[in-house]
Image 1: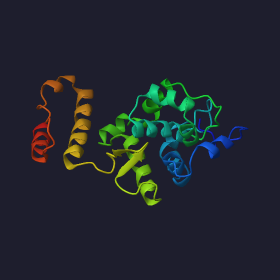
Image 2: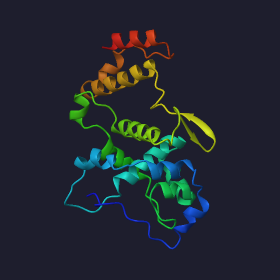
Image 3: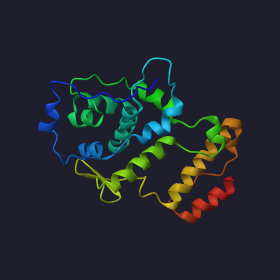
Image 4: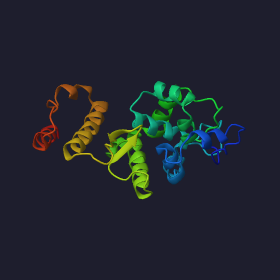
Length: 213
């Protein structure tokens, strides 16, 4: 069951955020300028509205996954880092002294709330996580948090695959979804599909997709 709203940060240590996290910090800016309420709209049908224990708020869970993408680390690593990194705790709407989640919670969240259902797979729908992150990036660009197609974190320029996806990458992604769906019905298809292209040449990728279909 989803809590009606995220809890306010009522902590005697909350002022640490203002003292230690600069106003121009990337995570601070994105947290203050991006309205994440669209997460609830996308996920509300995947939660029971009137029964069960309160779950960790879906916006916070999504933010954990977003941080994983930004810093390119594992579930365990991002949770461990959020124990001591105040910028991460601020972004996650946590008090400085709050306990973090168990990394296994991220696995359950992806499986139960994010991954496509069988019906969605059958319709050709892809990862909801990709859609949510792309929406976040779009809003961040609109708000001026991201000024180009590059996300700047810790002075390292990390090209966002949600803004700079080539035609070849896009086709490979969709081909992967087709293969996954086929494997669910017939595992022997793994031996029948053509060899995957290793390069980024669009003509090679297009030829592979045509053979696969």
